[in-house]
Image (cartoon, rainbow, N blue to C red):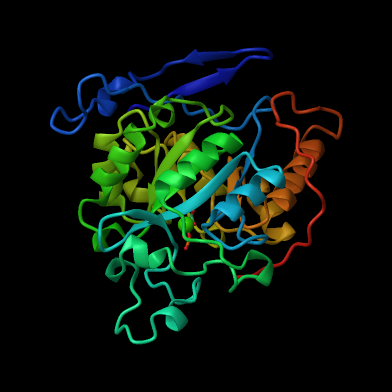
Length: 332
Ligand code: G3P
Ligand code: CA
């Protein structure tokens, strides 16, 4: 177990290492090339000095078409510091941002390619995907918004100074996608630097496919990895190499969150789009949560922290959020 217990000081962080970090984070020599960063960022659970995080889901899915560059822009405008995206692969091996395994719901593929038997992402080349409109389904305001590649998204995230939760979506459909994502990230090594949750350029790679994450963690030993879904209590010890467990918010309670923390995991459940849900998750002790509505999420966090401190403590480390009020809508 490479977990770390941490005490956060008033001004700087003092790390108390209870077990060696490198023990289980050692790279597989066959996978991690010489010179690869191997030090993992420390796990720091919520204290009065660290901000809770509202991760902006699929870009900012409540405000802009999901998994688009416009969505990343919206997330930043709304005050998000971290966004979540979904990554899949085209027929010709390009990594693209899409949630569904078909192009049907979020593009005009049925209009542009009416005769194709399949509208699976995996059956289209990038050139074909580029002919699709991934914005109009959401709103005419976003007409013509393209499906971005992972590379384009990383470049935009760097420009916007946003952190990233990268979900590898259905990796069993895309054998070798872990290596391809690794190669793309290695071209942009700032993402491989171990960072703590509130620092810029923090990357989490996560998936519902825990075996895929085991593979990915061996190739990206400096990058924290997350397990999506609820890991059974009796199996938590199996995943000492992972940093996060991010379940559906409806499946957790305070005892489970405590258990995750006792095992050294951070947890930011998905996808919470109501104020009541956000409040409940925060009361249960989560480290943050994933939401389509990042500004509303930040407001819930601010209110929670105000209540927690009796309404007097300013969160020194909390980023400034100046987002406009947005309606809370539960789209799921
Ligand atoms: O980040 C977790 C969350 O995105 C998982 O659900 O279906 O929206 O990818 P989904
Ligand atoms: Ca996702």
